[in-house]
Image (tube, rainbow, N blue to C red; front, side, top):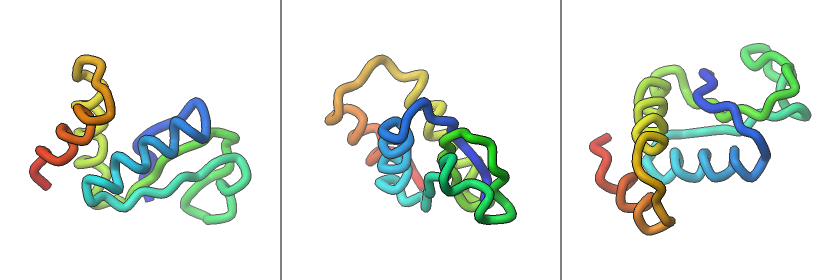
Length: 86
């Protein structure tokens, strides 16, 4: 598992996870209560979105693209995700 996003809140992490899942990338949220229970995910107190190692580069590229895009409403974000070639 590879962390691809550090969230400021559980809601923030959930939104990122939903975006990744909607793009076909398996994503999990590890927070202060979960991290450390799995050896690969050290306990840090941070809320992290993690993906499978083989999907990390694609997930980071998708998140970088969304962060660099102009502010988008939900429909624009859905279009951006649907138009990504996986």
